[in-house]
Amino acid sequence: MLKEMDCTDSQVRKILSPVSGELSADAVLQLNLNTKYGADLNEIITDAKQRGGAVLVVNLAADDVCSPINEYLAASMKDKIDAALKAVAQAAGAQEIYIVKPADVDYAPAGVEGKPADADAASAGAEGKSAAALAGVKVKTVETGRSLVLREESALYHMIETGELRSCPLEKEFPSQGYQGKPTVVADAETLCRIYEAAQPEYVESKLIVVSAAGESRIVEVKTGTSLLTLLTECGMKPQKSVLIGGVTGEFIAKDQLDQKTVGPCADWDSVSVYGEKDCLADVTRQLAAQANKESCKKCVLCREGTWHFAAYTQDITDGKAKKDDLAMILDIGPLIQTGAFCSFGQKMARAVVSSVEQNRTELEAHFIKKTCPAGVCKAFAKLVIDPSKCTGCGDCVDECEEDAITGKKKFIHIIDTDLCENCGKCVKVCEEDAIVMQDGTIRVPKKPVKVGKFK
Image 1 (cartoon, helix red, strand yellow):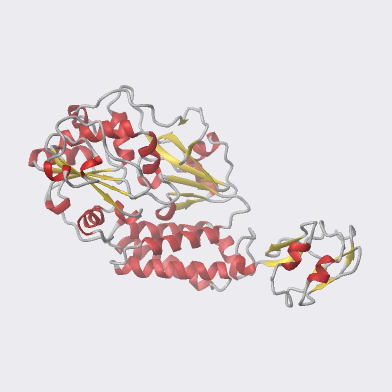
Image 2 (cartoon, rainbow, N blue to C red):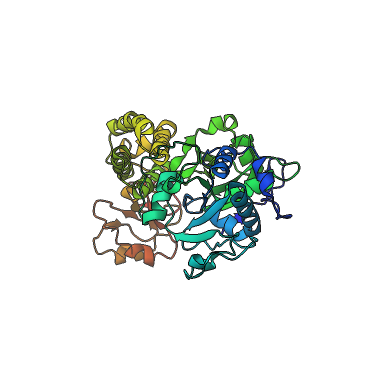
């Protein structure tokens, strides 16, 4: 599970405070909040209450893989989620509750008062055990995989009904219209926690953010309105390259524009990824495009074709096979997808790739113009070389090489002929000095054997 970042400054605070008591339905109806996906919570709950027979859907399956906020909160803030869930259900007059979650997220609502679930739910095995329900309310758990497409309400409802990931046309005749045309309130774990917090005295709006750097991810709570630069400074981070906010559906922010971007309460701020010199932003972009292609429900032409082409273009970049026209094509088709894709997933995944081309163009172009990966990450450019600062001229690698690709003699820095080398790695295993490494040209080597210690 995510660990909390150790920050005590004014903007970046400890994670949400513990539960301090029950939350009333009346308190929920007084709140003026949006869900993290942008829906007007008060309008929807009020409308659902007036129409009767409402449905409450708790969506725990829409996290990006790099920001498992629902999973974190389900494990660490269950009491707060339970209290808010109960209050929202009462405020909306919910008659059914659906918990949509991945199998590895351990959450079932508890602590709700009233009679047990009705006979149908009680006899439904695992479904009936998911909660002590509100009086007469059915509670059902629907297990699914994680998908950003499930941020779209239509896809969420289709998953509950059929188990299939598919975004569908959804036209509302009234604000709360949702699952099977019934009045429906949708909330995720963070929104439920925010509902609980907002009903407390001296509430200050905040956002949970997963901050990642150097392969490590931590979760922090940040006051909304805080600049991205302040957030990273208080977390002790100094970006060396552009910063990615929001993961697959986010955007890259230039290093010199971090003070102009402020934290908001929406899902676009679920994650902040910081990169250093050893990170290849071409490879990061390739991974984003590949994940978008994998997660797309493929029902919308623009998203289906767009994610496929983005994945292909970015793969070519990291393979050194791309052309300048490919970057131009991304910049041409990206805005069309952002405008015309059916759901927010398709629109926003295009933004991530387009912003990478805009902010990281020099690094991307190096891969197919200079035929090198500046960070030494992309394997297409990697070759075995002998680091002249470590080679002792022992000759072990020369004896081991079956291709006669290594030249050198005792006490001379050895050299690998990359045209003959098969990258088998046998020489790496016999080198006791760890002088033979896989890299992309960032280590300068002599053109012919030079005495050990003489190469500058």
